[in-house]
Image 1 (spheres, rainbow, N blue to C red):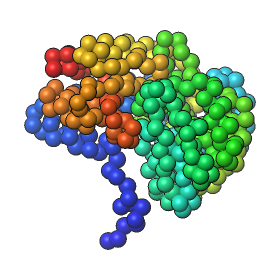
Image 2: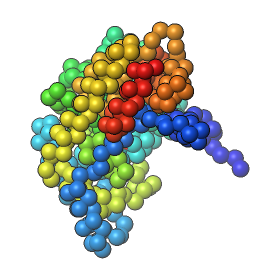
Image 3: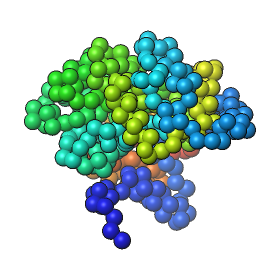
Image 4: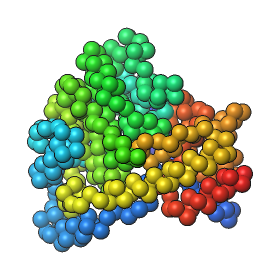
Length: 384
Ligand SMILES: *Cc1c(COP(=O)(O)O)cnc(C)c1O
């Protein structure tokens, strides 16, 4: 059998390797505690599940959905963006529900990247930006996120020739894996850059509602002119503990949204309508679940930071996201250090290099682990 070259070009998905390593250790009888995967451990709120159960019994939801989702869902998303960010969006032209934001991120590359085009991709970064670029025949040009620059890409340092060949600038704040946040000034710079080089800026923003200490992340689309050159990907996954249900959205520039809709209409047949009803219930229902979740994550964050600092790893408490990005001691690579933790403490963390070469020197710990396991894991790190 001869698979396409684009498949051969793909490295294995980051977590496949980690999952294998965990399975090996468990098979040896080790009680493994994993801080590796960012997937909320807290269940989806009851009122959202109730809506699913009810919608599942309605035969209207047993048939093919439309690619662009229920008009009521698009309107609900428009209302939420208005309430949350003060933005007025056209629910027919500037909003597209997705089968999880990862799906839309991947397909957006196919809408903009032709053979040999470049995409500007953060390093470290969520792997889908670079992998979908490669699948579409293009090449990622990595922009390092460094601590000195507050884990923001230095757009001024992108060579003109590279910027001119680039079709997409990918950004992601609150950031995975560094937990960094961006302010309006950075989003304005991104918009200016995108206009100057005629490219699309894609902001991946699933963590705007996962924030601590009263901090409120903003939307790219709040930057003046962003609607002309920008799209934002958002999701129900992290806000409402809905990763398993697969629903998210793209909002922003109508031309880009329409391109994504046309691409998707040829590849998928939309989102299960009962799940669209869950999303509507999530946005329209009580919102106290968000504050409750964030209080849990914030407590975990503080415990993790305290332990890391005690054992000599440098980490600042993040203002948002589900992650702690910690500097490891001198003399180790990220991979060596992660291996040491699993071998000597049965604790799994993600090596920073799993997200790109510029992640060297760091590990990522996820806060989506039940309190008792988190405490046990931290106790083991302290002992080490
Ligand atoms: C979790 C995550 C997503 C994916 O969200 P889904 O809507 O569940 O597909 C996208 N981007 C980043 C950076 C994430 O961490």
